[in-house]
Amino acid sequence: MKDVALPTPEALRQRIDDLRKSRGFLLPHHGAMAAAVPDLHDAYFAMYRALTLNDRHLTPFEKEFVWLAVLIAVEEGIGTHHLDLFAKAGGTQRQAEAVGRLVGYAHAADTLGFIGAKWQKYLPDIDADAAYRTGFEALSNGLDVAPGLVEMALAAANAAVGRARGVRLHVEGAYRHAMPEAKLVEALSLIIWPAGVNHFLDACAVWHDLMASGVVKPSPLFQVWAETPRQGGFDDADPQR
Image 1 (cartoon, rainbow, N blue to C red):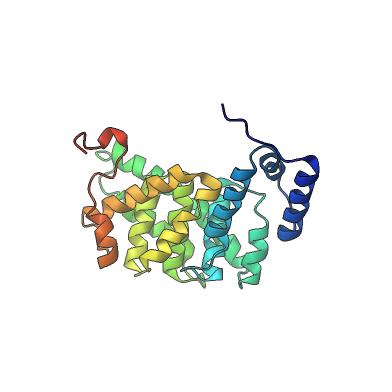
Image 2: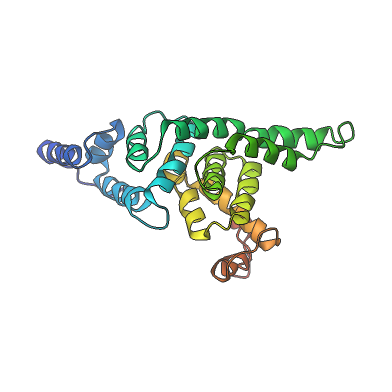
């Protein structure tokens, strides 16, 4: 076992003080990592900056709108700095309330799917996907937010809690509204922080299936990804490779 040098108490105190000054607050795990795994601590904040702070494809309002949906979906109350960023980006309390309603409704994709799968012979006129879209559009009607952004936010919210059906419906919706695929990648990637990379992986698998099956038509750039074979885990790997 490698003998990893730990920081001195003075060095740890300085690191924590510097972090508090740079961010304005501290969370419990910051001190634990800084004390025992400072290299992970450094990598952690490099990842945090790349994932949440760097400007890419989403506007500040778009990013914080998606963040709000994701935080509500995973019930992460500690992310209050995103409420401040949402307000600074022009977000209103009416919009935040609407996000809460929409995220709360998102589970209906699974419940209606259950009805369609299990009771189809008794309720043959119910189209689960169409029924979900009807409710979703009624809840989002009149909201002064671009429909494509609402679709991306709900795709991310569903991805954060592992609801593949909801991810599928809202990725399809994002394509219907011609949302740039780079924005959709960024929106979905935000869930890595509060929900973990595996949920992001699963959401990308749903998206890839939609492209590969022709349900959505990718751009030439994303067509390269759509045509990439064998994107499963080790058990699906080609033994000859």
